Length: 175
Ligand SMILES: [Zn+2]
Image (cartoon, rainbow, N blue to C red; front, side, top):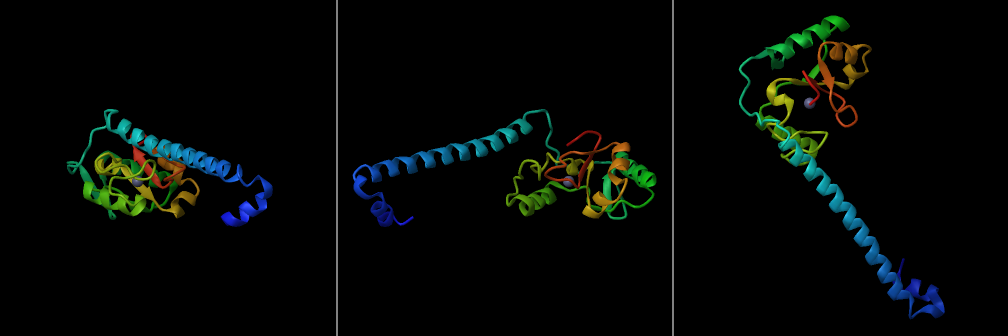
């Protein structure tokens, strides 16, 4: 609201009004500031915890990678994908599978706006199961297709973050 208009509406209480208003504004800013620090601090803490929970940063190319129909995975994960496809009775379309650390950084830049990644949507380069050849991202069409999620889960895949990244499945644990 226009300051002059507000003062005019405040009428006879002109002396106390502006000071009260200033205090209220300051309080709102403090609350917003605390909330922001909370959000940023929380994310930083989540990242710090991720770095210190024994998850090793992996950037070397896994030795047992296999490539079939443009999908590149570690041998066990490739077999598990094949089992899931057999169970559901058709090919499961995969958007991305193995990613190098450089490719992970590029993916995070696209998804989060920073190569360092963002919680729940793009793990920092080296900490994603994509770098181990143990993760796939499937299409929305596959998520919607009957039986695909169940077949993947039956074969050892985990839909690790369904709320924020539903197409992402990791093999041998939820990551
Ligand atoms: Zn993924």
